[in-house]
Length: 528
Image (cartoon, rainbow, N blue to C red; front, side, top):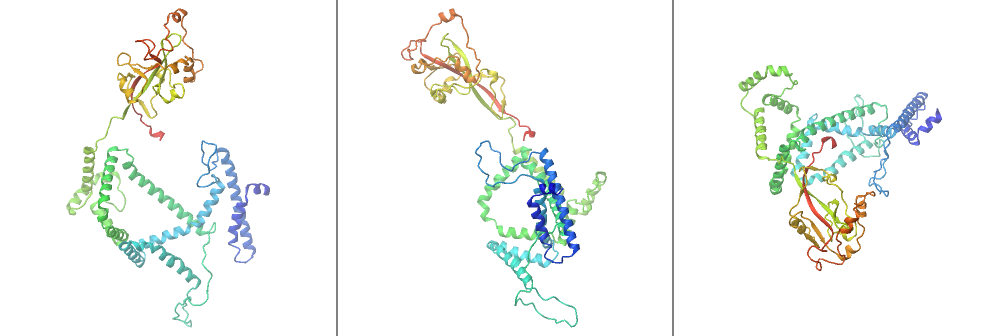
């Protein structure tokens, strides 16, 4: 059993246990009870670590353990800027949480002291805070003095007083009285140090309770902020989000011009004083009464639906008779309705989805054997004589059939079928394509002008189609010997300028343009 425990327990676990035990060896009592308690505690911690190791081994068989490194496609992955970080393990998580909980007490103490100051537990402390805040608001450069003052009076002075403590007071009649505090002389007490809270102690469990409450407060605040802000800013209601966007744009433009004219010091001063005074017990009670009087708030809890339905008219009548006119829920409701009316009337949204026109080029090639044009590909490029692929000697890429042409990613077909572009000269001139002959009537083909250097060595025929499509089993159309014998041949040395009308003036490629409308595709919320 000891060998199994030694296999599971690493040197880090023994070091942590030894670190915790060192805090108890300063007393030097050496009694049997202390030794027994220390031995029992060491055994409990070792058993807990062994359990964590066993659970980690079990989880490793079920869940793949992340190594904490970024997964990159390339083999030469550069190290992360954050360095190597260990992956998730139960033992490390448990150890780190215990260490964190033993050291987080100072944060909770600061939080408790800040709440006591803001809640007017000691009015002198709160008034002192208001005085400092006032000086900082009136002279903002004093904010750079605050860290120095906090270091002096919050760290050095208490540490010095801890080393030179004042004499303790005594109530005995024979004690010497009226002795003032004097820091002179050698240090009388050891220096103040901060040690982590011992595990299984009262402070350790107090930190656990505070950490639990902080997590709950954060979760509640997070959910309230998300419920308040996200529906108005995520364009789920496009009219409302667009109206807020317009208002923010106007506010940005206005603030760039008038920001230097606003008395920010006095605004911050009044806002800070109002926020702190609102936490005063008397002021908070008056605010609660004002909310109950004018806004219909209920301090004792929300009434049930049945009670609210029965006494709704009575409460409205009582408010009208007993309370003078003032700010009420009706005024806020009227303002909200006015804002909604402005949003509906002035914010105009484009209900129709965005549409674009896409193009595809139908390529045909002149057969060397039959002298007829054969369908080749539907390509996104016209494959003109001066295109980069043509100059580099690459074959055209695309698909063989119209039905295999897909819309761009994120788009879907809006038009039912493809339409032939009748304005062939326009798209040729837009692309500044030269060395071609354009048909302005008929089927709107755009032919290559015969090139002696290109067509003279072009004998690949239909074998290029299989390479362009990635299909090795493409079959060349077979024609009868009579058709091949009677098909007129085009002389390879006749160019556009030398040939007669309709004889030998065109190259081996022709193309025409087809267009079709697409619209943006709706993205499912689950895919996000």
